[in-house]
Image (cartoon, rainbow, N blue to C red):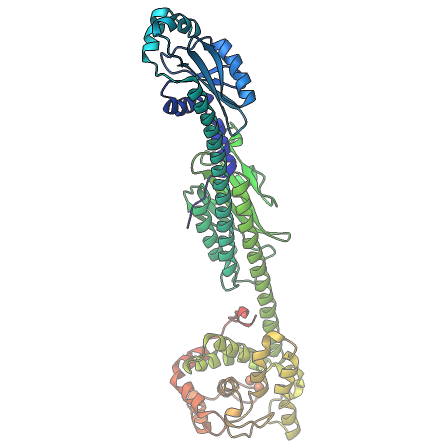
Length: 552
Ligand SMILES: [Fe+2]
Ligand SMILES: [Fe+2]
């Protein structure tokens, strides 16, 4: 993964902030290479001397400064002094920010002897004649027309170099923008790839933190994940305490983070909060470990699920809009995911509540069979597990066991609680409970997979059961498993008119009924896990073990 680059604004500012003396010195070096003599450099805007090589004769700085301002305005190389075979040349250079510099040097351009030129040179260069002779002796000879032509070319070269530099800067800025945009799209894409509800907000936050820590120019970053708003007390899955995840150099505790959010007014803020050194260097700042800070909230609609908090530029600069925008994009995806997960959890909670209510309603209707639904559910699940059914099917059969007798809600109390044998009519009435159960649940889409089990849990392997007289594998496998679990629990439990049968008798009846009333394969599985089932039957439970997310 590539790393974050300096923003364009910072590049331009660094160019502009190079001192006038540095830029003047660079220009002097450049033209010295072309002409073979040292140059002074003037500020073309103010006329001030910006750079002079040590020991170089300067002439009249004031006069030259004034002339340089005119050369800078006309933007072309000119001779600003000419006398006795000496020519003072001024070459303008227009900087990217529009300011100008002018390089100035005096040349020997005509063939008279140095002795003859010495007085003029002394006057032009503002020195005594002896020094002028020494200076003249070191100068190369430049014919005036060749000098002016070269100066013209030099100006054009400086102009074209400046244009090249400007274009280079634009290309760098463009690549930076493309690179930043690519990285942003790439992260958002990766996050959206992980938006499945199977991935929890903690895992998605870790992916985002890992990426942001590498990509942003920061020392550390954290996510504070809060318990979902309006969390019901019965929910056992959702986060109940705030969770602080961090990447990079992070030293703040959960308490520090809460104080920090309050101090900068970020609690519940909808927009990114950016704090820089103007604030963090003030005396009232209480967090010495934080020099720069960005906080964005993880929101969905009006609900806040937490915060992303980045601290300290890794090169001691300020954090700004670019970093805040990137964090805000990531935060909005995390916020939406938290919101969706919360909605999903609420639906699961609602469905769990419905199933608990239905199970309680059956138990309340027939107190003698209290706990029957839960035991049938667990025994059926144990048999199904032995048969190698997958996890989702195990959940389905557990839920089916819980609600298999829901139709008994519609059976008359006198019949249901009758402490003796039933009349044929009463038995016919009881036999309507699978179809009644089906009717009760049919509009709950989430329980679609449970319906066939509710409807067929009283079918027999030999086709003599009800309601449809299905034989063998015509009845669904899950219904055949629940049928065995149901019979096992019914025979073993106490009833108003009889005590529960001892295990030995129950086992004998089940063995005898294999291939007649019950699926022999299921009976075989039942006995394979008989010890586990004995334990399940012994253990009463206060709460049902429900995870309704399997059905959403
Ligand atoms: Fe039943
Ligand atoms: Fe039952």
